Structures are given as structure tokens and as C-alpha cells.
View 1 (cartoon, rainbow, N blue to C red):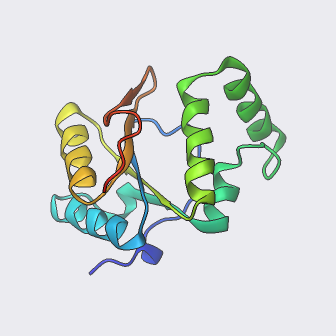
View 2 (cartoon, one colour):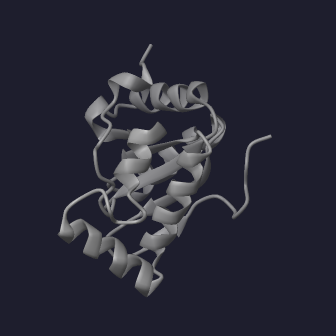
Length: 146
């Protein structure tokens, strides 16, 4: 059984290229999704978790907890109103509500769909795929598990 605490917890949410991301209301749901993804052949290094105060600091929506370069990046994202900013803003709100963000490396369409399905089956919501050229919503806006 994988423990969420064992998975990588990056200290900054960079623009997540070639990743499928999903929010989870409960750690148990995120753990179940992570276990299912690992059973499909991903390694623990392919997964990243953002949670709690450490996750809020890593998302750094205000751009005040990191270097000048990272603060500039957040300002540009916010000013341009890009899909990147939508992700940062949503992540900040979700993490402040005690939810978790699970991010998984997905290099192709099949991997993206597999991870999204496993996240949905395990209570994930706000699932999206982020590529260098676009940000694709994979669950309907407002979709939350019951």
C-alpha cells in the first residue's frame, strides 16, 4: 500500500507540462487513485502530491514565497488570465479547503485517458491535462464526486 506521504511533494508548482492533474477531497481517495496508477505501470517518481500548508506554499498563488523569477511567473499568469492561472487559482482554493492535488506524468493520449479514468473512479474532480501548448479540462466544470 502506498502512502501519500511517501510520494514526491515538490516545493513549487511549475507549469506542469505533459501531466494529468486531479483534486481529491480525501487523502484515502488520492491514495487509492495513486495505487491504481502505480499498478498500471507508473513509478512513484511520476506522481507529485500537493497538500496542506506545504502544498499552498508550493502553489504560491500570491507569488511571494519563492524567487523573483517565480513571482514574475505568477504575475504573468495572473495578468494574462491563462489556463495556467486558472490551475494555480483553483489549486490554491482546493488546498486551503484541505483537499489534495495529484499530478501524474502522462506523455500521450492513452496515458492521459487512463489516469483521468482512474482519478474519476477514485473520487477525483477538476481533472485536467496540461501540455506545453494547451490546458484541457477532462471533467465537466463543477463535477464533484457525491
